[in-house]
Amino acid sequence: MVAVIPPCAEFDILFAAVMHRDTLTPAAGWTLVSTVTSNFPDNPFHQSMSVYSLVATSGSGGSNTTWAQATSQRMGVQILAFRPSPDTGVPLIIDRQTSSLDGSLLTTFPNPVATATRDGQMGVVFSNYPLADNSNPSVMTLTMTGSTQTTPTSTVGNRMCGGYVKMVAGGTTAGSIYSAFGGSGGQQGGWAGVAFVLGTPTIPSLVEDTDEFYPPEFSTNSILPNLEEDPEELFYPPVVTQ
Image (cartoon, rainbow, N blue to C red; front, top):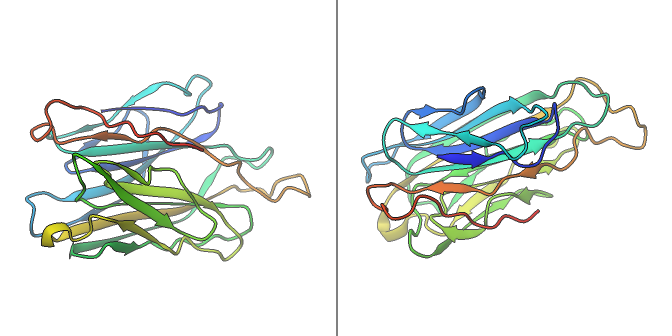
């Protein structure tokens, strides 16, 4: 499937959150940050949540990235672009955490908890759930104090949810993600989630500016249905506002 990189500048740090159900071949040049897989008894497949990173070049913004699975399965990809404040150096992953829950009827899944080491760092969380309405919009929401959800709250085939939060020293990504389809029809679904904290090696030079990053740009969330179930549609492009 194809996902478009949002507006960005050279040396911005890009992250792709990918929901997938089989062995993933990432877009060229991307590096794995974290991955986790959930298992569940009522379906013959697993569902994974993976995050990849890439340092942007001058021509990255607006370009296409191609992500593939070993078999025709559902996928979802969203790309975020973070721009560090001037003179702070190459961004670093300060902390990364994953969690999963196998065979669950729960509608709400606790976020993996990653911790900031100083003010101005960014926390990012993405989780997925395998069940959704493939004909009508279904709801997924992120609850994390002060956060911005970058995925749609309601869209057809809504299986991945996430966003970011500006952090203070000692702050965490604690919170939860809700799916209206949790336990739908008595089916046990599996949750899979990734969280990380993004920082820089140097404190910003401007005394009045303690933020290490500007708010990110992010792409429209691209969803690829299982082609065997939905051969007539390749993408459901929900509107994502900033």
